[in-house]
Amino acid sequence: MLFQNRVVSNKFYRYANHLVKIKKISKTGNRITLLNLHDNTLIEIPLKSSDLLLNRIYTVGEVAKIVDRQPNTLRKYEKKNLIASPKKFGDVYRGYRNWRYYDEADVYDIVAFFNGRVQGRPVNKSKGFVITKIKTINQKVKLHK
Image 1 (tube, one colour):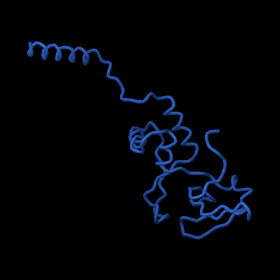
Image 2 (cartoon, helix red, strand yellow; image 1 turned 60 degrees about the vertical axis):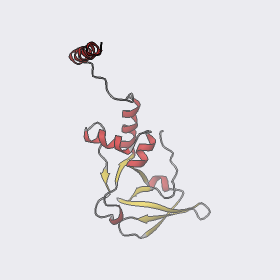
Image 3 (cartoon, helix red, strand yellow; image 1 turned 135 degrees about the vertical axis):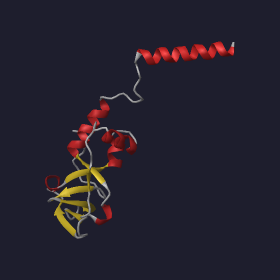
Image 4 (tube, one colour; image 1 turned 120 degrees about the vertical axis):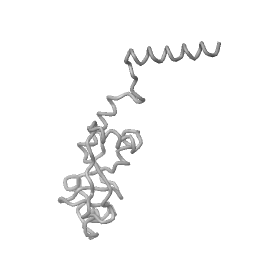
């Protein structure tokens, strides 16, 4: 398993078809306090069964850290349709309307994509390109002699 199954404070989750943020984890009280991002209400759930009730979602920045790339790199591959496009928090979540996120399954796919890819720019291997470059270099050398 790529991710830990423990709940983390100040991170985003999906809870009962709402996006929430963990505000407080009380191990002694066996409670987790969630902030419903839709209407800013606080929800308390039991800590013991939180792994069944909460599904972690990841912001673009968090996914970029996981795959050790820049967020702009993820955006580039999204535009080329090589990785999944993130979902938007949307207008329902006022302070987060332009934020984008991935579900855990999407993150697994993105990690697999980047693990199978070699970093760097792709090499242009066309013979015509290489021959043209060699001719150009030879001409420059002749001019300087």
